[in-house]
Length: 62
Image 1 (tube, rainbow, N blue to C red):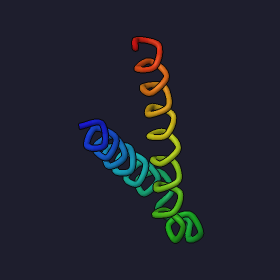
Image 2 (image 1 turned 45 degrees about the vertical axis):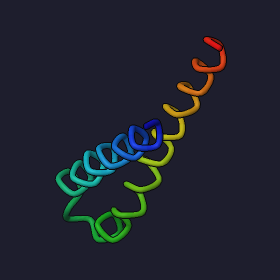
Image 3 (image 1 turned 45 degrees about the horizontal axis):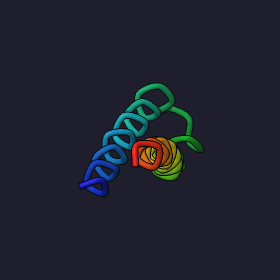
Image 4 (image 1 turned 30 degrees about the vertical axis):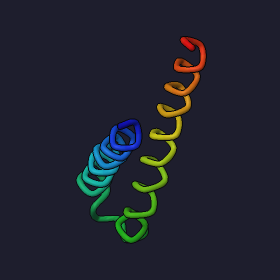
């Protein structure tokens, strides 16, 4: 269940970042080319941060 939550968090963060960059900086060639990579890195880091916090909370409760 935790993996599914993390994956959904990743997808939501990726979509928000992707469309945010596309909307704000769509005329810049470099950003539009690297948009997928930037969005994936941002989504991965936010998902890792949230997962780490969740794991720490679960250890403290146990």
